Length: 111
Image 1 (cartoon, rainbow, N blue to C red):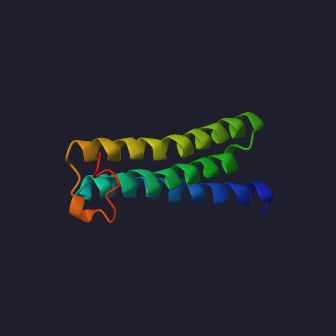
Image 2 (cartoon, rainbow, N blue to C red):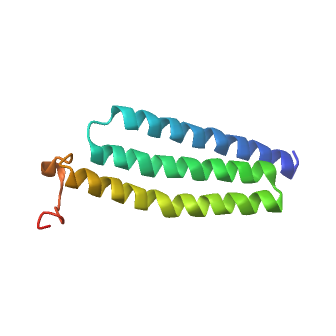
């Protein structure tokens, strides 16, 4: 088996794993009961799923211009998902959509 064939197989596996994590994240968004749980499923498995998809694409495409674009997408995904989740959580807290009994520490209680 050549190195290119092995890279294609590993890339295909990573694409399937990333798609599965994206599906799990989507199901979690629908099924989880509160905002904090939904934020968790919108960031952790979704970001890992996107990174697995990008790694799979990198192994399948293998051209420098494509790899550069995939690296940029990964950087933007890693930098925007946590910020978006924090903003959604803060807006939900201020709107009274967060059950405060679920919080271990309520750092915004005095504000």
